[in-house]
Length: 437
Image (cartoon, rainbow, N blue to C red; front, side, top):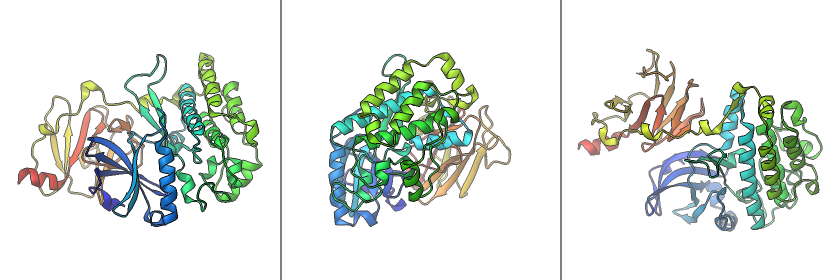
């Protein structure tokens, strides 16, 4: 679907690819009518060309569009145009929780416990609202939980974070039924409820089980079950007891253990009967945390705060205006590297891959403090450029969101990469030619 970048569908101009899954691809786009960024999810053609799928897509998108909650990604529009089936949603900058979890596993770290409880409580709020509105998610998992960094906390003492749950009801689309799909798998294997494994009709308590799996994973640093196949999912979710979370993470407070165990009960009647009830328990556990709980939970060096992971660019270090850059020679894409109060440096992107860092062996040397020897790699793609953080000590930001080390991330010309004191952006050769012609 990379060929869609630069294309306009109705009033939406597609800017860059954000991610791709089994059902479709998500793009960052610009709503030209309202002059705002949006997330545009376009279904894969093998699904979109099926009349039954189209009908179910419209049903589920309409149900999702009726949801209005601060922790649910807003659906702005949905339609079928130019042979494409799509849904237009609120754009949330940054990565999904799934990307953060992968990063934490690699580094053997866990999220600060108070933030974990805070975020899962917000997700429970969103699910509770949706359930009361007659909508069951069916695919609660970290990749469907986005995290927005706020400029300031919504209430005193809270972290400046806001969960955004996305993709309500879309898991239902890949099943054979029209309204109440049964007998088929809906969801993602490690997070599926026992009743999902059996293909039974679902209610909100299925989402509560999945949220319990997420809480187990965030609190302990590992999934409750090692699941590699549908058979594994059936056997383990239905019959096996996961390792007690307090043995995996001995410092876990008993109140959190109780929430996990109740949410993950095999029998839905033994779980929280409403997501709002689970949210209340999570907040009570969060408010009861003591300094001793925090100390016992994990060594300080193993605990990270998403507030710092999602740290936005400081207002006093705003990237220089595009007008500050000198006009470079045309013929190749150009990299513009700037620092506050210093002239912008221009480099020709004349190789398919370039490394940036302090080492003299790098293609582009960035010598300031805060830059690692091998800090970033730029990779040319069919649609432009992508950026990869090479495990740098201080990390890199893309429009204020921290890049996951080793992950190739699409980088559009209107986005800024921050590495130490440097601000990086690139200009396509076509733009340069029109500017100089």
